Length: 260
Length: 260
DNA sequence: TCTCATTTGTCCGTATGTATA
DNA sequence: ATATACATACGGACAAATGAG
Image 1: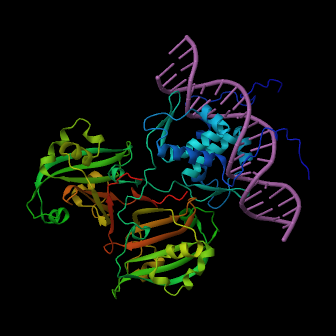
Image 2: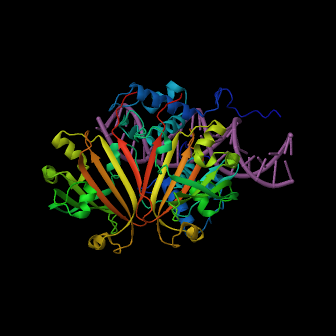
Image 3: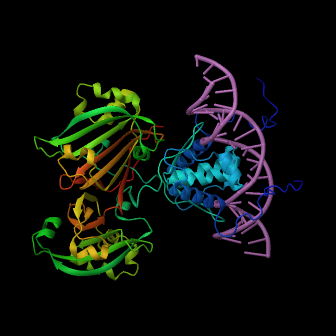
C-alpha cells in the first residue's frame, strides 16, 4: 500500500487543493484581472517567470494558463516582446437583441413542434463528429418536425440529441410547447451558458425527405445548435433541415454598450 | 549514455531540422494518416507512449501534436480510454465566427476582398425590395469577391449597396482591408447601431456564376446584412452568395450574467 | 462492488533555440 | 552584440478516469 520513494513529495505540496486544475484557476484569475483593469489595454502581462513566482507554479502550468487567454483573444504573445493585452473581455458578449437564448434563432410562434419519434441510440460515424464524442456513445434522440398551421409542407425536420439521463423530458405534459433545452435546465439545474450555431447549405437526407415533402438530395439550410454548460460540455445538440424556400433565418444585433 | 547533457537527449540529434517545430510535424503526419484511413473512424490512435517511441519524442511534444488534432475536431481524448477518431477531415470548409457587431462584418484575415467593379445604379424591382426603397432610388454598388489565399474558388460574391454620398470610400488606400461599414462610420460620423442579418438557401445568379467558379442555378447560402443607424435608416446593405460547401456561418453566444 | 492495469490529465524541473528590443 | 522573454523540447511523477475482470 505504501508506495513512496518518488523523491518528489516534499517539493510537491498540495498539488491541487480544489477540484479545479491549477492552470485553469490561474487563467481565470488573469482574465479577471484584465477585465478589472489591472493590466490595461496595450500593456504587457507579467512575464512567465514572474507569474511562476507569484503563483508558485511551473512554466508549463503558467503557459497552459496563458493559452486560455490566447484562445479567448485577450492577449498575444511574442518571443522577446512579452504578452500584450489586446482585449479586456472576451469578445462574445451576447450581442443579440434577444435577452434569452430562447430567441437566438427564432421560429415564429405559430410554428408548432410535432414529435415523430424518440429513441436511445449509439452515435454512428457522422453523429460522432457532430456530437464530438467517440462512435458508439449513447445518446437520446428525438425526431420532430415544425409546421405552420395546417400547411402540409413542414418548415423543418429537427433531431434533438440529449444526454441519456435527460430522456425523461419527453414525459412532460407541455413538452411540445417549451424549448427542450429549457426543460433540461429545469430538470438538471445545469445552465446553458453558451450556444454555438452553425448554418450552411446541405442536402435533404433521403430517410426524412418524404415526411418533409421535399425531394431527397434537394438543397437545404442545415442548422446545428450546440447548447453548452459552463465547462463547454454539450447539454443538447440539435440538427435541423430546412428545405429550400421555407425558412429564412433572421438575426438582429445591437451595438454593444460596454458597461458592467 | 554517459553523456547526459540536460535538455538534449542522445536520441535527438537535430532538434528542429529547419523551419517547422517537431510537434507540428507530428501533428501533420497524424492528420494525414487519419485522412488516408490508417486510423479508421471510431478506432483509437496509438497511445501517447507508443507515439513517443515511434517519433522519438517526449510525451509533451506528442501531446502538443495531439492538441492540433483536437482543435481540428479529428479526435477526442479521454483518460483511461484513449484517443478516438471522430472525423477523417477537418469539419468546416470555412467558418465565419460572428462574435459581436464589429466582427459580424469582417471575415477572418485570410479571406481577402477583391473588388470587381463599382458603379452608381438605380434600384430595380428586386433591389427595391432588398433595400426597402422605391424603385429608381439611386445607390452606389460595389461588387467584390472574397478569396482564401490563392484558392481559385472564391468564398463568396458580395454586393455592397451604399448611399451615393459614401461612394468615395473606394478611393481609400487601404480600402480593401477595412470593413466598408467602418469606413462609412469614419467618413460620416454616423454610427452603425444595429445589424439585421438574414440567411436562406438560394441559387447562384447566372451573371456571377462564372467568376464564382460555380454553376448558375446551383444551391447557395444567401446572406443579407443591413447596417442601420440609430434611426433604423440603412447605411449599408450587403448581399452575399456562398456556393455550396464553401462556407459555414458560425455564431457564438454567451450568457451575460457572470456567476462567480 | 471491487480491484487493477491502462491511458490520459496535470504538474514539476531543466535546457536551448529564436525573436525582440 | 547583449539581455530579455517566449517557443520548443527533453525528462519524471502522480492523479484521475476508464474499462476489464
